Image (cartoon, rainbow, N blue to C red):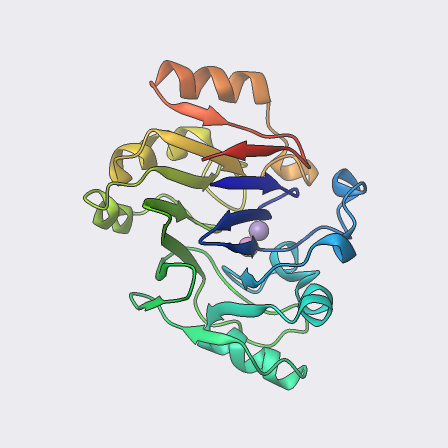
Length: 225
Ligand code: NI
Ligand code: MN
């Protein structure tokens, strides 16, 4: 299974014969200037919450691809008001078997408002059961004891925010790997803005010292999961 990083918390995961795009924030991100959103043709777009740094390109990419949007019910309703009527609304704790695999929506401790001020429901993370692997995409979240609920899911990979200020920092993300019982981590939600700038070398050293296989891909880089 392949994943490609598009900056901030945006990734494409290719699994189950489909392209799954997470939290598209690409065109406003100067660090991702080499990524052309018109070249992205996802089959699904998964949205963790309504903040601009996760949904800035959601409507444009959806209209260009007709992707099915997987998100919390409130965001699905909001999309309906913007002429997107194929969103698949879910809620925390619920799962659904899609044609590419199963998605379960899980808790994230954060906030969620749409860019126009509309309520975005609760923020969420996702657990994906695809191609025989189990992947946790945490979204924006604090370290939370709810992560311990994932300890017996046999997670193969976890996408965790590490940028501090709005989410967990590196130290809390390392604690999270114990809670979720997963030592393969892709870091996200860092460096995009001054308040979430990290020392990448120092962060990698901390993860490695904790016995964690950490990946911080370059924007546009693909890695095999
Ligand atoms: Ni956020
Ligand atoms: Mn964010």
